[in-house]
Amino acid sequence: MNESRPEARSSPTRRGLAKHAAITKTNYEALAEFRYALRKFLAFSEAAASEAGLTPQQHQALLSIKGAPRADWLSISQIAERLLVRHHTAVELVDRLAKLGLVVRKADPDDGRRIQVHVTKEGEEALRVLSVNHIEELKSIRPTLRKLLRQFAGEQSR
Image (tube, rainbow, N blue to C red; front, side, top):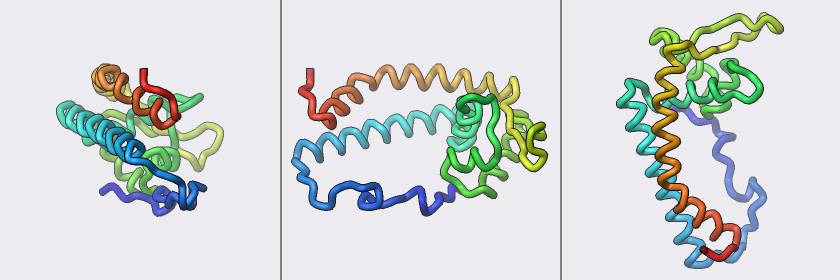
């Protein structure tokens, strides 16, 4: 149940891209290759999460919480925002993670209306194993990504 928010799917014209920008065959090839590399990484990530007994969304939620900037927790609203899902979908996801013992909810001491979601030791261990594998996979595709990003920046491939 991965409900995307409509605002997460903004059109290119809403993001300020020129309607009539010149696109070359090389641009199309680079974009296609970039999307292919991203899809391969996402397929790897989904398979790795599955092998660890998690759904891709559960893995993404754990990573978002553990990787929260300037905090070691996220609110339900922040989880929904980071995963591009509706609030009630994030609540259900956190419920499932809590039942698995991978997260805990705590009352926010600064705002009693807000709940903090923290990763447990069990959640951290599952995430650590997945993250080590993901970092290795990213290292393996780094040359391809660098080459493609240089193409987009207009640099010569080295």
